[in-house]
Length: 174
Image (cartoon, rainbow, N blue to C red):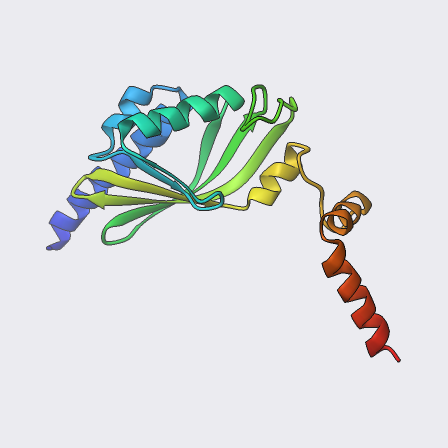
């Protein structure tokens, strides 16, 4: 592909990703769906895959029920041969149920990366990477593992592993 053609494809993909992200911010999910040739989200931190329009719309409903003010702030955007890679902050307030967990009312800001895979100038998959523990700690649903509450939680949740580690340290120090 010549430089002019590559620049045109790159420019169209850039515009599609920006339209996709902004339409998510204003909850215009018809427009968001329109940026895909086939709607698909892969949420790597949770292992979830939402494939097809009905599942992607369910994903929007679930996440915006839990976080009605969910929005993204673009940090950087880079191009690859068949993808656009975006770094962004995701923000929101936990005001609705999240997978059976009651709302905490707490805000979060979590740095994420998304790979927007393309076929031509339409998205075929948005694959999102983030640190789930960071998000859960900010929502008050998990503890920093180095804090006292985190250490107690780990000890209660993994007594055999902790006992082995403790005994191993004792035996090695002799």
